[in-house]
Length: 100
Image 1 (spheres, one colour):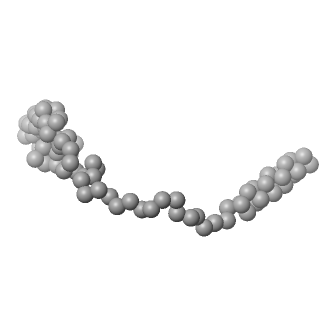
Image 2 (cartoon, one colour):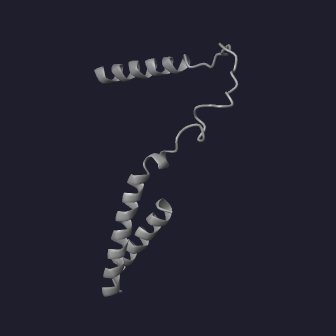
Image 3 (tube, helix red, strand yellow):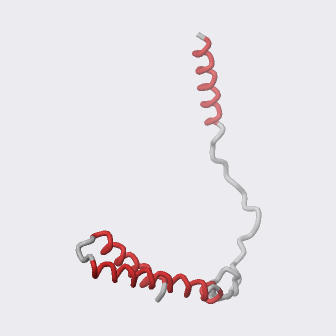
């Protein structure tokens, strides 16, 4: 019996809360400002992140190339290994995407 009262009260409060969600017109508070020609968010305004971390990118690419070479050597020994074929393809895709 008490559960029904609680559920009825929760439902009533929920419906009453939804009634307050009417859209009201909002007056503009400030004029729209035109973006500056030399915005700080343009990609050419700041230093290139790839140039800043070039040595880290080079070391990651070097390690991927080394792992790809090792996987290719193992694939020559086991040409029927599907996992090695997938690994070589994945290494090549990463190297082509990130290191060129």
